[in-house]
Image (cartoon, rainbow, N blue to C red; front, side, top):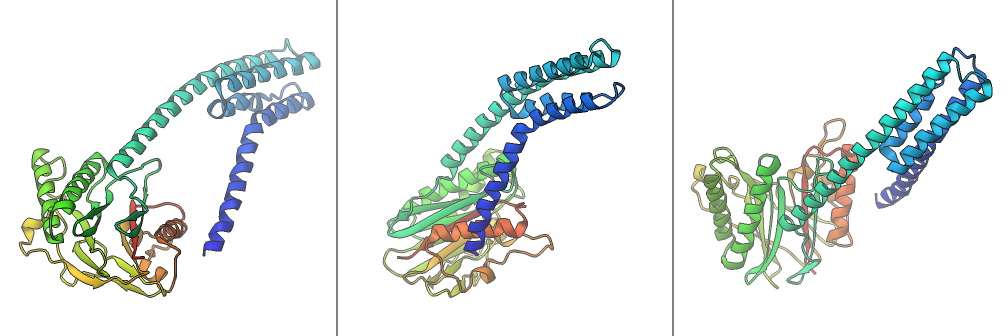
Length: 370
């Protein structure tokens, strides 16, 4: 699989490079085609479509100076062709010239508007990147002796953060992790993500058990929903989440699942163990509907094994036939060099599975026991 992906990337880059090169020379080709058309057809025929297309193509792709040069070159070529043919005073030629001059001026205006929009978009992207770094900072590659990798894939183009979340925190009780998915979209979901991660980092450092950490997250979401008077979907909102704890030197992992897809343990020999909750629990934010106390479950986590936590953007990714991507079936029997290699492979395979169009955000977190 890796070889196929590595071969496809250079081919795709060459295709993009050729496309960009063709687009850059397209205005010149249109001008040349217009000149040839006017030169070798009767006077009743006009090459105005070729000449007007040249500056319009240049407007969104070239700089301001480049767009003005293309417009000026088009006007000069139109004049030169009709002077050579001796038709510069004909009504058809004058109409063509006026049309080209008008469109060239419009192209210059379009170029200015496009540049301003591009600057605003670049600014918005910088703000989104800063928000992602603040809310979802990428964890260090090693925390508490464990190898760590995280990845966020947004379904919406040019989006950097949505309702999926992850966090890693070292603590006196071991390395603690959370991966979750907030119900809803937009800034409300992002606000809930910030609340959950902030509460998790505080609770993971001070609470002695995962059950207490989950309770702190529940209370934090309740407080925020009350404070915002429904801004976080206080009546119907919830967050699916899975909490994990890796005690130092014990070779086990403790899992507390609140309505989230079960984690997977990938062993060094390719075996795979799913970790479904033996006693399912409701998502965070719905605690009032189920008064039973949380219960963390302990499973073996031997040396060389990798723990994979993910959101349903992975397990519910569909192909053109509507078939889901099954991480358990896809990963069983395979060996990866490390957590980062595992997550890169997953992201590439999901993109291929869906044809490059994710329908939901996807957060991935992998931890390997050295």
